[in-house]
Length: 232
Image (tube, rainbow, N blue to C red; front, side, top):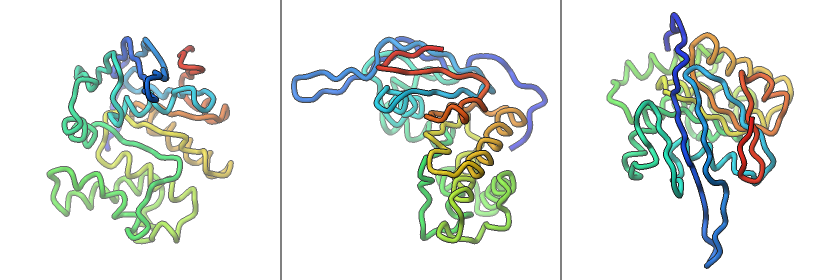
């Protein structure tokens, strides 16, 4: 992943009139309605709010993991809200890097093999995949742990492997769902240092859901969601 000479300030993600509802029998459960949001290229944006406020649902829609009820989500000119599930799967493989709260590493695979997983969906050869994997592990400071299994790593190290997996394909946007929520203060700070570096040095666009005001303070901007209403 190369460092850009400059970071553009154009809009990368444009959300307009976004609504999401579920049905429980004949009752409509509205998560949020008519949300508008712009995320600029290279921005590190934190999204805060209480449990059940709709922030993780919004994150999953931006990731192409969930469909909105109505509205548009335009990423680099493509409205992913109009894509089929198959189209979204292809789109995610090249455009989205996702960081989970509980790492989601496969315990039977080494750190390197876990990081390589997104690349198996590309046309890269084995040698090229290995080069990308080692570069991603070097970025997160875990080159010497490439052949270790998740059970041999600390929680902070496992999350750094998760970050390496998220960036290995050089995605358009990195999405984090409480990426420090299961970590102690020291490990959480190391993860946030990495996210700041990815944004500042490499110009990556990051949207992070968090409950932690200390984590949100590390972002360039913060938005709040409460009862389905999004505010600055």
